[in-house]
Image 1 (cartoon, rainbow, N blue to C red):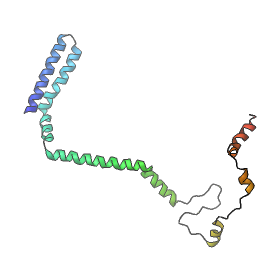
Image 2 (cartoon, rainbow, N blue to C red; image 1 turned 120 degrees about the vertical axis):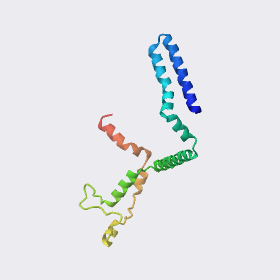
Image 3 (tube, rainbow, N blue to C red; image 1 turned 90 degrees about the horizontal axis):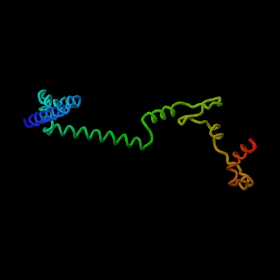
Length: 160
């Protein structure tokens, strides 16, 4: 009952302001103010105000809003954790599919072995890395200037 009285008073005040605005020869603005001031009384007459007041004062409704808020909080937390891990569900699915498929190098004559494939004794011996003796000269020749050898070659090629 109080909400209906307040809405009626707001509408009456708005119509009064619209009348004063129309008296000042601002008819477009006065019409707009009148339209806005009729909204509260329209809501009272349709029963929307009573429905909103009924919802606002029920504890079960507030409990429902709390459950919805908790659901939203859990959803956003899982999204934040997923973003921090750096992978999405689609990326993980693609990675699993890539693991299952056998990859073939462009110049290879046979598919490469997957993680679950068995290796025979001859292939296992060939797959073992053989220690290669390193030349002392090569190690001594490595200097900080070698990092720029490619760049120097390109500059010499262009005559710079």
